[in-house]
Amino acid sequence: MLLAFDTATPYVTVALHDGSDVLAERRSDQRMKHGEQLAPLIEAVTADAGIVRQDLTAIAVGVGPGPFTGLRVGLVTARTLALVLEIPVYGVCSLDVVAIEAALGAEPIGTGFLVATDARRKEVYLAAYDEQGRRLDGPDVVRPADAATEDPVAGEGATLYPDAFPDQRGPALPSAGWLAHAVAEELAELHDPEPMYLRRPDAVAPGAPKRVS
Image (tube, rainbow, N blue to C red; front, side, top):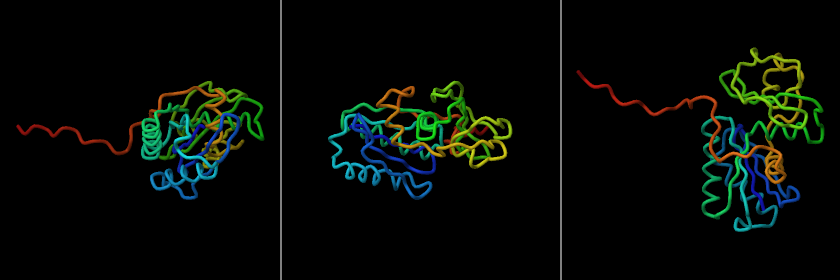
């Protein structure tokens, strides 16, 4: 039983996969409440599927890129659960999850495309994919105007910056169900459960004090 969750965007998404299909999936209804909502959502999907945590055999977690605080909540939770339950944990780039659904979901794009997600500071995280959802380039952090294109673009970045990305496609956000599919069916590159940061966090530890001469 695979537990999958992603906290790389303002919303938390959690799902359970039994090796054949997704049994349960939920998404948070409040933005930027990762710490408050991840644990209750995990409890909710396990209850939906009628299992307990001891039934889990693996964990899949989105590794970003995304804001430092949200990623930290998801990755610490994934590593802690994996340690306690003595099960493996697999990381997947969150943009890859969007791409796999865009390429293989209910409305496949059918050609090469981009995925753009919100990087704040009027920037986006951007990566390029082929028609099967395989990453060709990126991810990078760029200003939308510098990456403007007529090509199809999935992800929330297309919604936020329609002038730069007029051919908006779904999905807007990563789905834990598709994250689970990506791991169970080996559709994406697997990573260690470490955050994929493309720039330094806003909050940094102060440097050593200067010596007084």
